[in-house]
Amino acid sequence: MMTINNKEEVASRTSAQPANKTQPVLRAPNLDDAKAVHALITASPPLDVNSVYVYLLLSHHFTDTCVVAELDNEIVGFVSAYVPPKTPDVLFVWQVAVHERGRGLGLGKSMLQEILQRPGLQNIRFVETTVGPDNAASRGMFASLARKAGTEINETALFEGHHFGEQAHEDERLLRIGPFTEK
Ligand SMILES: CC(C)(COP(=O)(O)OP(=O)(O)OC[C@H]1O[C@@H](n2cnc3c(N)ncnc32)[C@H](O)[C@@H]1OP(=O)(O)O)[C@@H](O)C(=O)NCCC(=O)NCCS
Image 1 (cartoon, rainbow, N blue to C red):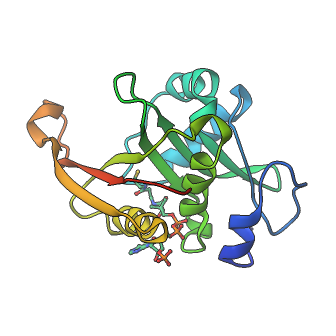
Image 2 (tube, rainbow, N blue to C red; image 1 turned 135 degrees about the vertical axis):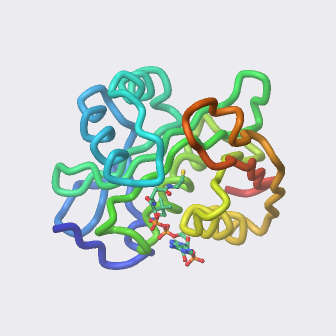
Image 3 (cartoon, rainbow, N blue to C red; image 1 turned 120 degrees about the vertical axis):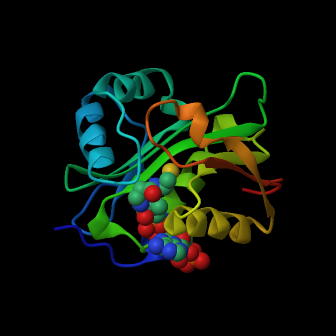
């Protein structure tokens, strides 16, 4: 059973500190995490479930911009993100998942903040992501990230239902958060 004491505790932990029963460790993913990440995404609707191969790629090529949260040897949180090739000051956040037992405790936001504080990402000034129209948790999390950084969110159209073809899918609107000055 996952228990997290409070938001400050989640936010203050990094992989430099040893795991214990109540505090998730945030660290870069590795190949051995891909199956567990796939299972977490599968258990986290409305996220699209990609193949295990995709999570292997993320854990191999994009470790600098992805994070897992591990508690008692269990993956309880995951963020996939990357720096788009043409916009080196943008971190594009693809999927964020927190195990349902650990939601509402600050873990989602802490994972995003952990990535932004990494040494190689000091040039990031904007976070971009896409959200469905009704995903209140996702919108709440990104709004909180913007509030905490004292910056703004700009929302525009990006991927529309028809772009997904036969597969029924809601519009995914682009949120652009920033500029981040101090992370
Ligand atoms: C979205 C998700 C990752 C949020 O993770 P979380 O750890 O519960 O979020 P946090 O505890 O860090 O919350 C951060 C902020 O979001 C807000 N928030 C969280 N869940 C919310 C909800 N259901 N409705 C409204 N706001 C919400 C919190 O109030 C908090 O704001 P605060 O910092 O001002 O108090 C989690 O709900 C999840 O995995 N959902 C299923 C998958 C998904 O939809 N992912 C997002 C799309 S990429």
